[in-house]
Length: 345
Image (cartoon, rainbow, N blue to C red; front, side, top):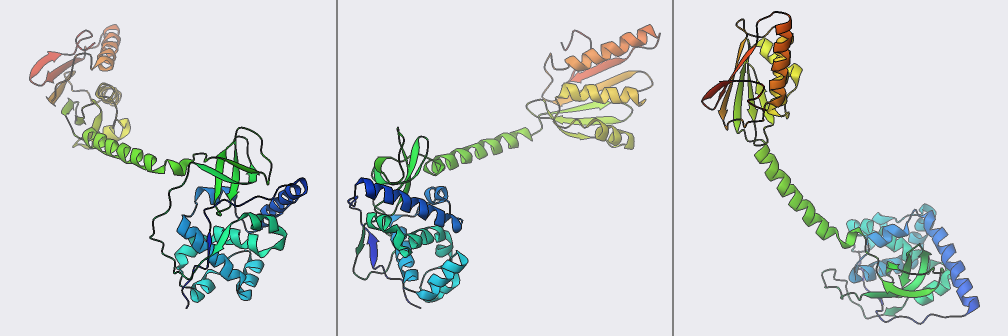
């Protein structure tokens, strides 16, 4: 196994673009032909832009592409399968399989450019220098990128264009006019998600912390309410007066809890539904008196509007039918009083 040696590197110095009407037309045709061939390998330009290699990685990718060009067996494999024979390259070069899989599309991208003489104008635009033998080091710091990028247009969009720079970068830059394929332009990089992914991750992390804190508080019971029907029903509420736990020790009570499905309901709605079920299923005490006991944080005035309204409607119906009135007594943290239409409204 040989170590991959960096024989060639992309130069940071911009290349000189050949100009002329005939040259521009030919460059346009070469790029269109190149993109058609690239599609045969199922490679999308937007994927190359969204996941760009750093300078050291790009030079390593370039030399892997050249190595394939110098190896007839690897070339045949790429041409036939339209893919890299990763294991074969791993056996011949001291390059990890992970690296090859990660940068496979870029390796093929450069390979296609340099393997076809019909792409001579694209090849000439890329500025590549031969350098002394030097084993690649991926831990070196990358050069700071400039704000503006110059390159030839390989795809024109509405307000931006994909360009190929002379140093082998594929960048989406902002444009304020229509651009032609093969035209050399310069501009600022158009920001995408990858430019803000650190900020996005920080935001997600903060949201998770806030969400976890809220959830932990949500699950802490602040009040315990016992509704004494023929089967006592225990309801635990959080700081939002939402039911976070319901329980009954009897079979009828358990059936009530399951049937009403009052978890995460407001305590007022929960008590009302418990009483509705109790009236419908003959679970009202024989003396028609229901005791509601509140332990912990007391219920505020205005909390039991729906419950009060429901009891009022039941009593009006009982009055018309000459039946005994329902009396609801509330022990609200030690203060006892009857539930009346005005008390909790």
